[in-house]
Image (tube, rainbow, N blue to C red; front, side, top):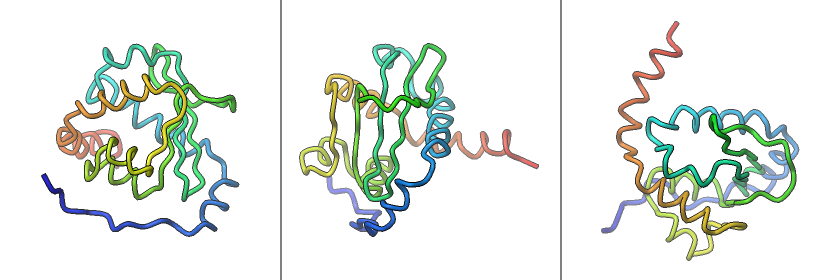
Length: 154
């Protein structure tokens, strides 16, 4: 099946990554952790993620300079302030993460075209990939308006 491209092929200017790397990484990490925790048990099933409990993760958005460090605990996702090597690290450009999130491209395609780099415990990476592939993303789009109006209305 040939999926039409929603996002043009772009790489943000290198100056943006240099600036982004100097900015505090905790605020975007907190946003990611909050989103993951909102999805946990609703859209992201807990059971397949059980082997990830106690593991640390890093997501690097290379052309933005973002390094998001987090872990999964018994009660959910939390930011990690530990700078040691993570159990699993995933790196890509912003455009490739957008294409992955929108399902314009799959992780295998990005990985084998060397646009998505996975380091560390590849078994964890495969488990995470399979769990995310099983998520019904259209249901997330349907839940978002109700959630936003319930939690962020004036």
